[in-house]
Every structure is written in structure tokens, then in C-alpha cells.
Image (tube, rainbow, N blue to C red; front, side, top):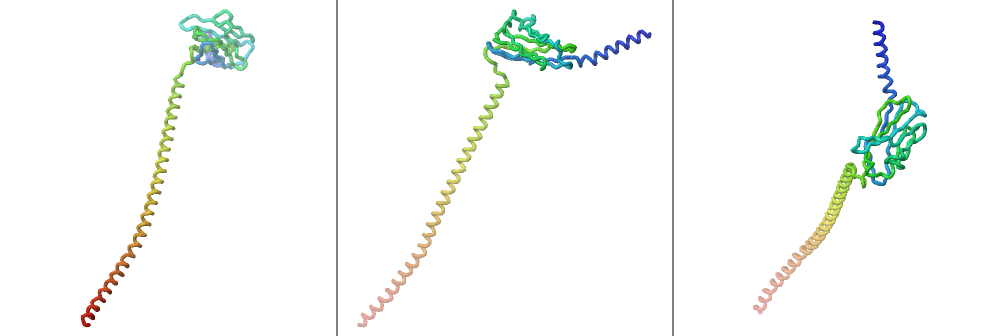
Length: 240
């Protein structure tokens, strides 16, 4: 019974240590999920990592490659003991360049002179003893004759064109309203000028109308006086 209880205690300690130490010693590797390239160009395969331990001299970085529609995996690059070992016999012969710096937690490479046959999955694996537990990270490479038009770029072009059209319409509306207001102001000025001219003519006509009745009254008085004088002369002539 004592041996059974001690074995259970030992097993519990092992499980507890595994649960507590494994997350601490688990190294984390990060890469892009997908990257695009064109034939004849180069592509930067970024690989960064995080480790709970100091970067030791025994750190290693390994890149594997699996072509599309194939189950075979090839080791194309390996870094260890401060030395880079590049595969010089495979499909990436003389086309891989080591640009990583493990002290800065960087294990990136560059692939030059891309070809259509380079389409596939690249896996980055980093070990930093004693931090050796963790998962690798992979990036999928797609090689095109010309750069693909991404959906985000198309959406950005559509939004930019729509905004440009809205701005043009707003400017046209502003110009039309501005021209209409100026025309209304000009028409109002012309109408006010015409009204002033008409008013001036009316005032002049009213002054002339006041003078004509006076002249007619004078003419009437003169004719009346002359008519009064004529009968008297006729009577005198008869008496004579």
C-alpha cells in the first residue's frame, strides 16, 4: 500500500511538472500563411520565433519544402553552430540566401529566381536547447507570371473611384449653385435699376401733368374775356 501511494505521488509530481514546465519551454515560431511571387523575381520567407530561454550557441533553424501535389518533403536549409548549410543539389540549388539573425530571433531566408515549379509549402523549425518543445510554422508560396490582383486592392480602387466621383459631383453642384446665385443677383440688380428708371419717369410725368391743367385754365379765362368784350362792341355799333 505504501509503495502504491508513493507511486501515485510520483506520478502526480511528473504530471504536474509536465503541465507547469511544458508551456514555459514551448518555443513559438511565426511565419506568414501565404506569400506571392512572380517568375524570375525573389521572395523573402520570414521566420521569427520566441523562446523563454536565452539564445544559446546550440540554436538551430531548419527549412523544409513540400511541392504542391506531392507528399515528399525536402530539407533545403539548415543553420546550426553559427554556420548556414544550404542544399546545393536540390531544386533550389544556388537560389537560397540566409538573411536571418538568431540573436534577434530571426530565421528568415530568401529564394531567388522563382520558377513555376517552386509552388509549395515551406516549413520553418527552430530549436533553442533546452527550449526544444514547440510546433513548426509554415508558409505557402504561389508563383505567378504577373502579380495577382488582390481583393483588397480591387476594393480600394473601387472605393477610391467612388469617392472621386462623389467629390466631382459635389464640386459641380457647388459651381452650378454659385453660378445660379450670381445670375439671380445680377437679375435683381437689373430689375432694381429698371424700377428706379420707371419711378424716375413717373415722377417727371407727374410734374408735367400738373403744369398742363394750369395752361388750359389760362387759355379758358382768356377766351372767356374775349367773348365778353365782343358783345359790348356790337351794341355800341348798333347805337351808332
